[in-house]
Picture 1 (tube, rainbow, N blue to C red):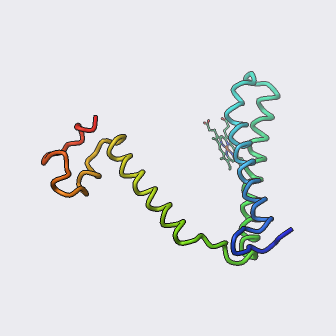
Picture 2 (picture 1 turned 30 degrees about the vertical axis):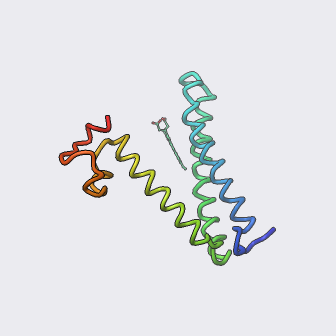
Picture 3 (picture 1 turned 135 degrees about the vertical axis):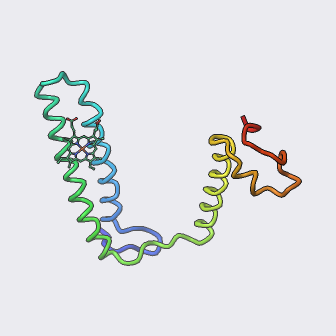
Length: 128
Ligand code: HEM
């Protein structure tokens, strides 16, 4: 089992703890979301609540272990600058489109050159 991060991958222990956290969180939520299927006052319902609390505490325990393991695992794998930049550019563009087509405000239009803007008094209603 690899205990140290390499330049390109997290350590085996960190990868395991990462996915264990996800599994626990899904189980914690599932216990609460599915408790409605069990009749009120039933043992099953009470058990689901207890399991929820127990698994929630496990999340806390795993987080504490994870911080310790992370501390000892060394530097995090490098993300290549180009990958990070592409990611940021993509997120930036997605946010601009979200503003324009979903929130329908004029954030995008305010950054367009004068001639390219749809109208002088853009209110956002034009995107509707
Ligand atoms: C990662 C940790 C946890 C998450 C994400 C979480 C999430 C939730 C969610 C989504 C609900 C349902 C709220 C609702 O539908 O109204 C809930 C309810 C509840 N949780 Fe947690 N929880 C966590 C940990 C814990 C822990 C550690 C305990 C106790 C030690 C706990 C005790 C409870 C209780 C008593 C309820 C209310 C149950 C009821 O409706 O009677 N939870 N939690």
